[in-house]
Image (cartoon, rainbow, N blue to C red):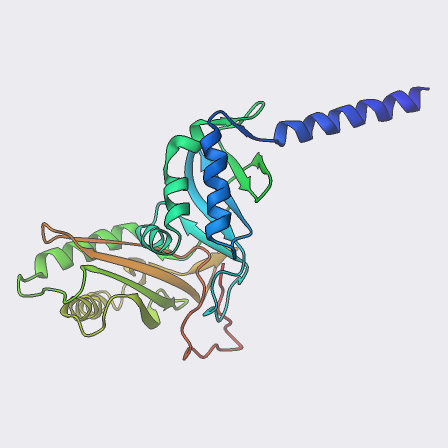
Length: 274
C-alpha cells in the first residue's frame, strides 16, 4: 500500500510539473499570430524565445531555413535581439517573426503557474510551453570593449564628408578571428566592397593594426576561448554611418555560421563555430 501511495505522489507531482510548463495567452490574438507564422513560413518547425528579466533577448528559429551554410547548424538559427545585424536580417527574412518577438504583446499575455523572469518560450505549431533559462558560461568571440571605443573614435575623427556610400549606410561583415585576435579572411554579408565606406573601414582597421601591432592587450577582437585557451573563430561585424556622420560598430560571435566558400580550414587549427 505504501508503495502504491509513493508512486501516486510521484505521478501527481510529475503531472503538476508538466501542467506548470503549459502556456496559455490572455489575448486570443496571440495564438492567431502564431498560426499565421507557421502558415507563412512552412520551413519553420518552431521558435525558442529566450527571455531575461521578462525581456526577449534572443531567439532560435528551428528548421532548415538556409542552404548556404558551410559550417554550423543547418537546422537551428540563432538571432540575438541585442545585435543590430541580426535584427536587420531577422526583419528582412522573417518580418512576421520579427514583429511577433519584438512586440511585448505576447510576452505580457503569457499565463503560466510560477513563471520565472528568465525563461525559454518554446512555440510549436500546436503547442506552446515554457522552461527555465540560464546564460551559458562560454566566452564567445567578440570585441575588446576599450579597443572598440578607440577604433570608433578613430572612424569618427578621420571621416570626411566626401565618403558617401552608393547604397545604404550599413555594412555587415563576416570575418575569421585568429587566435591572436587579428582578422583573417572576411566577406561582406550586406553592403558593397566597391563603396567608399567599405574601403574607409578597411583602411582605418589596417592603420589601427599598425599602431597597435606590438600590444596584443589592445587588440580589437577577442577570439573564442575555452578553458582560457583561444581558438580560431567567426565574428559578424555591423558598421553603420549614422545621419550625424558618426559611426556605430558592434558585432556578435555567438553561433555564427561559416558562409565563406573559399575558406580553407586548417586541420590542425579547426574553426570553432558556436
